[in-house]
Length: 268
Length: 260
View (cartoon, rainbow over the protein chains, first blue to last red):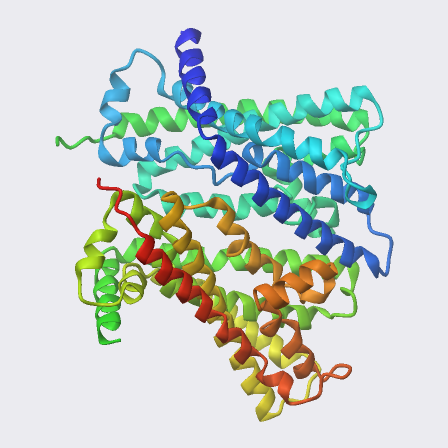
C-alpha cells in the first residue's frame, strides 16, 4: 500500500525537477519581492513611535524564510490535473485504482511542493546568509532551535497539504476550482502571516488568527527560527500542529468519502 | 476601434452564460486588494507613520495603483496570456487577418471579473482622497485622473513588453512578473521610501514615479512641488508605451511559427 504512494511521490519529484529554468526565474522573482518587502519594513521601522513586538532583524529573517519556502506555505499552489480529473469525470479511472484516492492525491501534492521547494530554497537561503548586515538571514542561536524549526516546518507542510486537499474536495461540490481556491488562498495568505507577520497585527486580529490552523504552517515555524518563540513554546506548538494535522486529515477523508459516494460521472 | 468593442461585447456575452460563477469571481477579485489593504492598515496602526507619509496618503497611492492595475488587467489581459498563443501556433491565425495584431491580442481576452477589484479600489481612492489634508483645486483633480490614466498606459506597456519576449523565448517568462505584479506591489507605497537605485530605476527606466509620488507631492502641496508642471508629469508616463509598441513590432517581424 505504502509503496504505491511512494512511487507516485517519486514520479512527481522527478517531474518537478525537470523545470530547472522555471525554478531559476522563480528564484529571481523571489529575490526581487524579498528585497521589496525588506525595504518596506525598514521604512516602517525607521520612524517607529513605539517599540514593535518583533525586531527588524527578525522580520527580515522571517521575510527571507518566507521567500525561500514559498512552495511549502502557499495555498494557491494548484494542480490542474486533479481539477481536470474531477470536472471532466475522469475521476472514474481513479476510483478503479486499488488504493485510496485521498492518500494518492496527498502524496502527489506533497511531492509537487517538495520538488519545487528543493530547487528553490537552497540558492535563496545560501545567498541571503552572506548578504551584508541589515539584509542578512540570521541563523538561529543554537542547533536545537534549528532542529525544532525543521520539525515544525515539515509538520506545517503536512498541514498545508491537508488543507489544500479540502480545497480539492470542495471542487466536487462547486465544480469550478477558481472560486474556492481564491477564497481559501486570499484569506489563508493573510491568516498565515504572509502579508504581515502575526505579532505585528493588532490584538483582536491575533486572536482570530490563533484560533485558525493557517498560522501554524508559516508564521509559527518562522518565528521558531528567529527565536521569537522559545523552545518550550515550540514544543507545545508542535503538539498543537500534530493535533490539527490529525483533525484536518480525518475531516478530509470523511468529506472525500461522502463526495465520492455522490459522484456522478456522465459518459463521454 | 469598432472591432475592439465588438470583441468586448462578444466576450461579455459568453461570460454572462455562467452568471453565478461570474458573480462569485467578481466578489473574490475584490477581496485580494482588500486583504492587502488590511495589511497596510495594520502596519500603520502599529507604526504610526511611514517616513513622513500618513496612512491616508499611502492609501491614495495604493488606490491609484490598484485602480490602474485592475483596469489594465481587465482590458489588456490578452497580452498576459499571450505566450500560450505562440506556443500553440495560434498566433498565425491573427497574422493572416487584415487587422492590427495589437488590437486582436487586446481583444482576445477580457477579464470582466476584475471589475470587482476595480470597484473596491475606486472606493478606496475616493475615500482616501476625501480624507487627506489637501485643498482640492481643479488642477489637482486633473492630476489625480492623469495618474490613473498614465498608470493604465504604463502597465499596458509592460504587459505588451512581457508578451513580446515570448516571440523570442516561446515560453512566457516568470521574470516578467517582477515588472507586472512586482511593479504593482512596489508602487503601492510612495517610491521614495525605497533605496535610491530602486527609485531611479522606476523613475527613468519604467516611469512609475510619474504616476506615483511626484504628482502626489503636488496634490499634497509638499516641499517644493507646487509648480503646476508636476500635475502634468503623468503625461510623460504615457510616452512609455511608444518603445513598448516598437519592441512588439520588431517581435512580430521576428516571429517564427512553432508549427504545431
